Length: 387
Image (tube, rainbow, N blue to C red; front, side, top):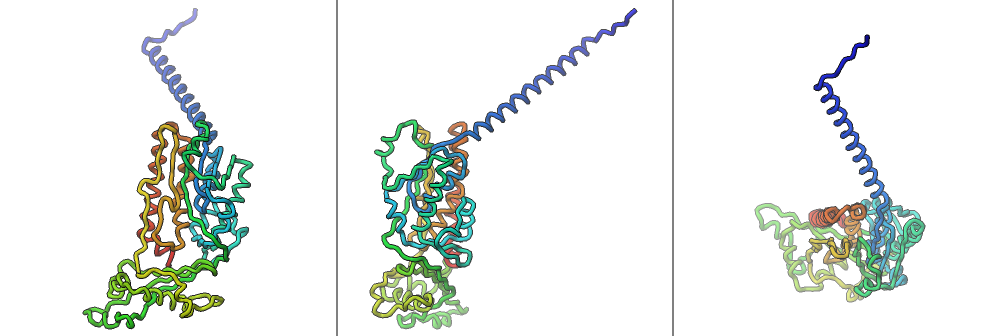
């Protein structure tokens, strides 16, 4: 005789519910794993075409950032200037420590580049810098389809000749300026807390401080000498809170000889030992501002855009995005700051599932560009140039 134990309907329901929940959970888990794997494979395989307009220091650095992102299948670099015009640019650039670290991460070897070090800054000619970056891009052709078209202008005609299916997903606009002669770079010379005796022009700071109830400190100026031995540049700056009779006089004077004499005497006092002194005969060859003026930064509030019909994201970098009203020699470093978010922008654009993802990438790029400009306006000029 065999005993048979029959399950109650409640137990059967519980068993069925348990099996159903387990099956559902397993199905969801398999779906998630497959989706994550497919998304990971899609993101890993995602590659886009990038077009960079301008082969100045910022444009070439942007090209390295694009290649370094690992999401570029084809990279095209355009510049209406020819190779000879690019490589003969004599202007000196001084790369600050932050820019040096940024370039080191991109594979730049400063030991193989002509230039010199001074206070953790690297000094070289723009032409030398551009030639070195072009050589790195040549080496990248083994991994990425890199095409450098010098002497080619970016225009509507250029786009019309390009097949619609080959249009780039990202366009980086980084126009630069070009020079004419060639020389050797020199380290910067900086001097701080300078005071000028303008009593010959009727400005006596000693009397000004005695006339007030509390002694007023004379405005201390910051001086910077930079450039090359053939083309020397000087910049004079003061703190924004300096408000004195002398400051007011220098901002509004129409006497052009005052600033010329200030720069003349300052250069002779702080020049390098191997440089000749400026004499009275050479004063008429010196070009300088007639009066003390404020260095200002102008920048695009919208530095990125999306062309919906063509599915193209555009970002503006370098002097095309933000420019100073006076060449202080730190524009390249300012442009490098903007490129710090370019790699992530290209990555997010390449792996975007829809337009919303692209818009989020554009928004983050614009916010970073605005942050770079605002930070520089608050403290960047003093820290990058005169400290």
